[in-house]
Amino acid sequence: MRILTGLQPSGGLTLGNYIGAIKQMVKYQDEYESFIFVADLHAITVPQNPEELRRNIKSLIAIYLASGLDKDKNTIFIQSENIYHSNMSWLLECLTPYGELGRMTQFKDKSLKHQNFGAGLLTYPVLMASDILLYDADFVPTGVDQKQHVELARNIAERVNKKYGDIFKLPEPLIPKDGAKICDLQDPTKKMSKSSENPKGVIYLLDTEDVIRKKIMSAVTDSDNEIKYDPDTKPGISNLINIYTSLSGMKVEEVVFKFKDSNYGTFKRIVADLVVETLIPIQKRYQEIINSPELDKILDAGRDKTLEIARRKYLELKDRMGLGR
Ligand code: ATP
Ligand code: MG
Image (tube, rainbow, N blue to C red; front, side):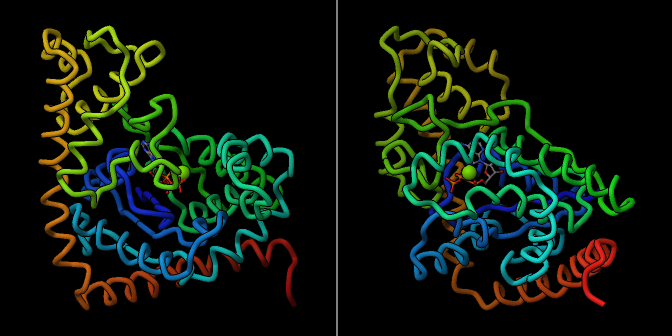
C-alpha cells in the first residue's frame, strides 16, 4: 500500500503540522511505501518572499529528517522539481467544475484573508489531486482540515475513470483519531496555521524553549478553572488536552482523569514540559542536518524516481484525452 503526504513551505512548521502530519508519517513509514514531498507549488497560492521560500523548502526537508523520517524508507522530493504535477493539474482542472472548487472550506477561509488573490488559490485542490493521483496513492495521511480536498481528489479520479477508462486509484484520507486538529493558542476556535498572522498563538517547531513555555502559559482559556474536555464550550483547555493527548499517546479520558484536580496553571506547565521534551531533540538533529550535503543527494534521488512514475501516469491521461499527435 502506498501513501503520499506533502507539506507547504509557507512558513515555519508548527506543532499542528507535527501532530497532524509529521508524527503520523514517522509512524506510517514502517507500514506503507511512503512518498513525501515539499509542496512548494502549493505555497505560492498566496504571496511568498523568494528568499524566504527557498529557506523554508530546505528547512522543511531537514525537519522531516530530524523528526525521524528515514531517507531509506521514504521517497522524499520537491514538488516543483517534478514538472508532471503542474502538467497533470492542468488536465484535471479542465475536468473539474468551477463550482465544486468554490465550495471548498479552505478556499473560502483563505480568499477572505487575502485581497486580489490569484486563481491558484481556487485551483489548489486540483493540484493536490494531481499530487495524489500521479502516484496511485492508496491513502493520504492528513489532518481533518484537508479531508475535503482528499475527497475531491477521489471524486475527480472517479469522474476521470468513468470517462477515460481506469487510470487512477481512488485515494482515501488517513486521519488520526485523537487530537487530529490542533488550534491556535490565542484563538482556540481557529486551526493553528503556519501562515497565521499572530505568532503568539502558534508554536513553531524551531521556537526556543523559552518562547514555547511563554506561548503555552499565556494560551487563552476560560475562567472555570476546571479541566474538562469540551471543544465547543471550552475550546482553549480542550486544545491543550488535545496537544497533551497527541504527544503522550494517552487517551483524552485518561488525561482528563489524571489532571482533574489540577488548576490551569499547573496543567499548562505540564503541557509545556511535554512539548519542550518532544521538540528539543528534534531541534538538535535539525541543526546537524540543515547544512549537510546529504540533503541534496536525498532530493536528487527522490526527484529522479518520482519523475519516472509521474511521467507514465501523466502520459496515460494525456493520451486518452486525445492530446498531442
Ligand atoms: P497554511 O497556513 O500555509 O495552510 P498549514 O499549517 O495549514 O499551513 P499545510 O501545509 O496546509 O499547513 O498542511 C500540512 C499538513 O499539516 C496537512 O496534513 C494538514 O492536515 C496538517 N495540519 C495543518 N495544520 C494542522 C493543525 N492545526 N492540526 C493538525 N494538523 C494540521
Ligand atoms: Mg493549510
